[in-house]
Image 1 (tube, rainbow, N blue to C red):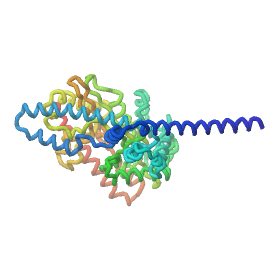
Image 2 (cartoon, rainbow, N blue to C red):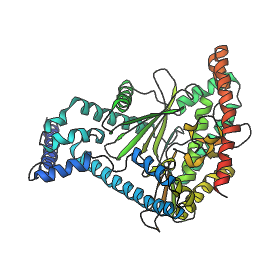
Image 3 (cartoon, rainbow, N blue to C red):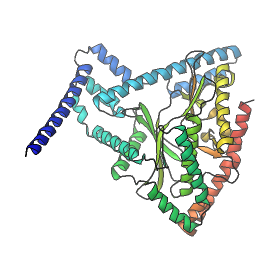
Image 4 (cartoon, rainbow, N blue to C red):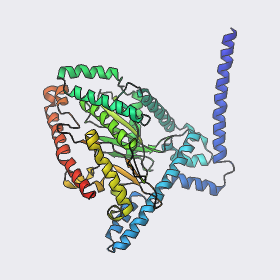
Length: 458
């Protein structure tokens, strides 16, 4: 009886402490955001958190185009150098702003992607916005997704990858995946069926829950329709991407694969092997030059199954600082000596992947369509660069789309026979399409990239 009473008192004490903590947090927020804040200070807060960047995408494109049209070589060079420093300062301002948003998000327990919309009411002292149904759903969905991904983080799960893995772990896991891949693709269809079933159970590949799927669909819908700029949606041949303000990590991106890996288990094994290679090469093996840093932006990635039993890759990654290589003025790319030197370091580091891993990063311009200009790596949108604000500063290259080409003969990103294994005669057309896609990627598009990289390194 005494034990039960003690437990009851202890439980009540914990509940009271939690309530006190919540009340104190709310009062602290309200005191910081409303009490003692002058009208000018409130306006400053609103302006800082809700204002758009000075240099939006259209402005960047216009400046780049105008600089390129200037005939005077010296003027182009001087303007290009100055503009490079301005872009670097813009990136630093954006980083500071995102850090502040993240801190405020933690204090208020409002996801950052909704904080900017809620901020005017909060500054005015309207704490009821904390109970907004949409905000609550997003907060719960974000927490559920976080738990879902964390549950996939098991030492035995080779279909999970994150930044916490060290070089030795990455090497060991990559070797296991390589051996598994080469064994699996050589099996008969009957043995593949059995092996796939075993590996699904062995790695405990999860099926996404209805609640999390609903959350991701809400995020996609919000990203497609949002006019505030807090959400951005984009879509490529293999992934759909939505950018938002996460609660802890500043601007963040979620990437979800589309249809090409859905039933192709061979490509799933190979994909995760290549992603381990990529993390090992770009995050754990920096170039010797101390003014160039390269990293892949993904925080974690996981393979799961949707409600139709299709394989999906989900990536959560930070929003890269700086601008894409494609957005840089041509004067900087072609004539700025500091950038030229750093750019060649970056390209040489990419080329080093070929000998060590048998793959090479895809930095082609997918927007160019199927023509030789697609290989022009100076038009890539897959790489961001944060330019230094000082002459001796560091050039930071961020890879935002982890994708690779194979360089080994007979190796391809997808396995066209998987459609025959899963669908029988009904998969003949899909198998032929995948076969054609592989051939064009490895025999044509990669060759175009090779030619442009060779030209850039001359």
